Image 1 (tube, rainbow, N blue to C red):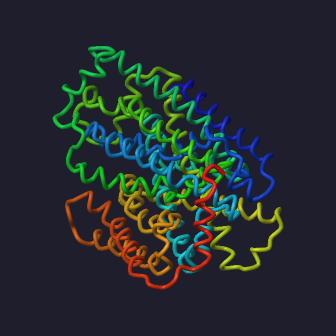
Image 2: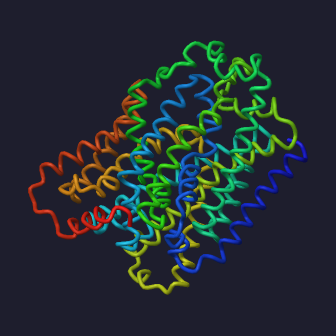
Image 3: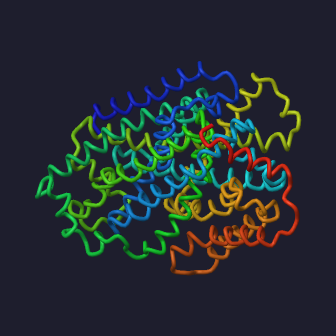
Length: 492
């Protein structure tokens, strides 16, 4: 990296911190801090939902998959996310917005107390918070690895740099800082992604036509929709996982819907995010797909995108691309910190310390900032020790993807009247069953990636449905009233 690159990167960090300071003036209470007062417009919520859905891991772990297996990455990742988010927009997103209006929730797990009981809510809150520590730590490690490729700085320095910047602006500005930084980061990502795409086209033999002709020149199988172990079964597994994740099983994405001003706005936000996932990754991932043509026989494919950027981009533009990678990671890690903080403050601490239920607005906001600070600090520590958990891919894809299902199944399906008979027993059994399947699959060696990823969520889904179907006890009145409030007035 040249001096100009560092200047571009420094300007980007100053922009983030400036937005955080601006947002500070808009945060008057915990509702502002966690849900932006329920005032997010559809376009801002949709962009934020999209940007918050992936991180610098795309340019590391996913870049490695694009290098070795090709176009299948788009099929099982971006395409399945687009379909999953579209389904969420129609069936789930409006219900999250209604929960905030009718039940005054600020965290995604807050409604579980009414839908199930205290034990179920606490189990989901605790397990989900712990899982997110590892997931977020892995994303910090991913962007630190890219900084190492670009500039030669140590991975430790990179994790501390990214972690501290996000820690500052999300702690002071809350969700308003998060979503406006998401928007700014999306603009940076567009500029950097289109620039990288155009430069790769210019340096290709067939110019613009290479978009169509390049696939025959890639290694065998790299142009296929499915390339073992990323089979059609794996793609359907990811579609199932992504539906529960992008519907709100990944809590920071639920927050985008919760913070929308109405059910109609939440639906439009989900549709926008879906469209972006369908189109934008085709441009963003293109340099990763064609990397084998320019960088042959890489010993570490996860470095391919960083090396491509170094190979083709002049000074200044290299810093812009790196800033866009930071943008992706900071978007997700900061929104994770904000959301997990809401779960801790609204659902976990009041159960441990009942006095925290009756705090003044000022003290409640102070507690929110303390929780956000502490969670971010812990993820930095995990990121510094990523190698102990199977590396970046292991943390983000295997651990988080496989563990997401057991806690998201009762969260998402609990919103739907079709599963009204699945009560707290079904929820607890599905969570414990899914986690046990995860442990068994980790202990028993097996070759199917689809089974490793999908086994836990399938087990949870079957158990949750079956236990509910066998339930003969009357449906509690509070659950009936909850579903009635979520079903009426679809545009509220």
